[in-house]
Each structure stands twice: as C-alpha cells, then as structure tokens.
Image (tube, rainbow, N blue to C red; front, side):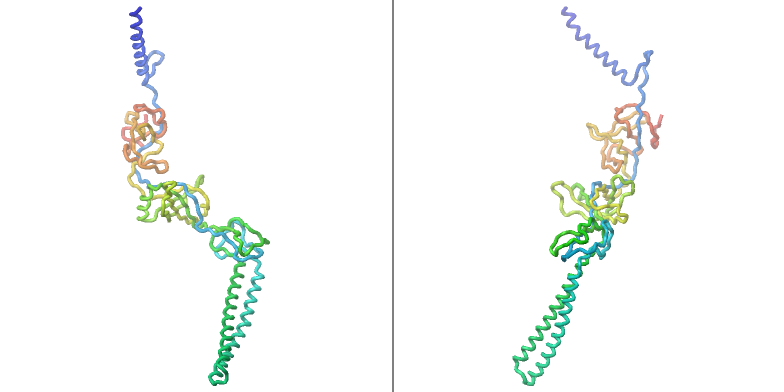
Length: 385
C-alpha cells in the first residue's frame, strides 16, 4: 500500500509532461483524420511600407474664431427712434446709417444757436466801433479815461459772448449729428435690440446692435508651454502658416498666419495662447466657432515614415510587426518622434523599404506565418504568395 501511494505523484507528473508536449507539438500544426499533421493556415493581414519622405513639423489644437473688431452701438443722445436702416445680419460699411433718433429738438437747438450768433455778432461789431470812437476821444481829452475803459470793457465782453455762441452752435451741431447713428466699422450686424418707436435716454447704456468685423478674423488657440521655445525660434525665421479646418466640412482648410503669442503662460493650464489672422474672404469662419487648428513650423525632409495604424503599444513600449522574407513576422520596438495626420515619423527602429503590418496585428505573435491581403509596394525578398 505504501509503495503504490508513493508512486502515484510520479505517474501524474509523466501524464502532465505528455499533455504539455502534445499541446506544444500541435501549436504549429494540426492532425487530419489519418493522423497526419499539416501546417497551420497563414494569418491574413494588410501591410504597408516604410518610406522616406518630407513631412511638415506641425502642432495641432482646437481653436476659437474671434472677430477682428467688435462694436456695441449705443446712442449718445436721448429721444425716440424714428428709423432703423438695416436688417439683422446685414453686411454694413463704415459710415452706413444704422439708426435715426428724432432730430427735431436738436435742429431747433442749432437754429437757436445760429440766431444768438447773428444777434451777438451785430452787438460785438457795434461795441468795436464805439470802443474805437472813444479811443480817439480820449486822445483829444474830450472824455474821461473811466468812460473810455467802460466802453472798451463792454466791447470785449460782447466779443467773448460771440465766442461762446459759436461754441454753443458747434455743440448743438454735434448733438444733432448724434441723432444719425452710423456704423463705426465694416462688419456684419447682429440682433436688433431696439425698434422704431422706442424711447432711449441720453444716459442710457442700452446696446442698440452689435457689429462684428469678420474680414479678417482671428483664431485663438493654445499650445503646451514646452512648445513655446520651438515656436518662437521658427517665428524669428519668418511668418508661420496656420490652417483652420471646420469639423465635418470637406472643403479645404482656410489659411492664415500666426500673428500673436501671448506675453504670459497660463499657470492654471500650463499653456500659452496664440492667435492666427485669416482674411476670411469666403466668410467660412464665424465668430464663436470652434475649429481644428494646425500650426506649421517647417518641413522635415528625408523623414522615415510609417502608417500610424502599424504602431502598437505593449508592455515594452511602442512596437510594430515587420514582415520578413519568409512571410513570417517579427516584433520590433520603435521610437516615434511625432505623428502628422495618419503618418508617424520614426526616430529609431525601422528602415525605408521594410514592410509592416497595419491591420490584423491582434492575431500575430513573433514568427507567425502571414498572408498579405493587399498589394503594397514591393520590398526586396518579400513577395505575396
């Protein structure tokens, strides 16, 4: 009994070893009904080529469109609005008439000032004549000095009154001009916030309409502060191109230039704000709109490029499956410098002309036989079976 119990663990060990050997033997082959082994089928994959090409050095961000100028139109005088001379959303030019405030009271003030000038001009003229006459009489000692001084003072007072009348007339004309509110900039009008018949006060802060200038527009965006030094270095060499792409819009991107870098980093986010200027001739960019922004610093020539879909991330970092000449794959660690659109620039690990797997990686391990399901550019020693 004791001998049988002692040999039972040894029997189970041999059974486990036999099972593992059988599993390992069947990994790369399978048995048919007659007991013969056949190679496992190749894994179908899609591949791409490692190429050498020129790619731009770019940063991408989410941007926001801002008008180049915004004016909130308000009235400087009080009265009833008797005319609105534009439609909401209309394009207006600088100087175009927007509103008319009842001008009758201000026109009356102008006429009154003009009448005062006419009256005081005559009186001032008479005062000058009297002062000149009294000056000649004092020289002949026909009047006293006191009488002459009194006439001269009266004449000077009339001259001062005339100057005040002219100032009052100018002010009345300015107030009358405020009754006709004109656009201060070229732009597009927004919502009409008052209508004909509304009464506004001269001290009212009510906005009548907002005019936004959208030719050109600004696009603001932020980049991490670590990119600031590189951006400034390239800015010193010349103007930098900024592209704005509207989400879900198939038309080409709008092009502008980098025109502003903020003078301080936002400590709460660790980013620096930048601004691009766009002519926006087609008016595709709209104030308040969020868009995809690409800032191009330069063009990197002779870069080793691979489709970004080929790159996998594992425990050892980023890697790709490289197709060998015997139609098996090997896993190779790589270093990615940066990604532009759907292509990645490889700093280390790949050479131009090599073939990499871009679809089907989940079914692969190093040494797996593959079947290429597309027609990539041929590489020496790699042929589609």
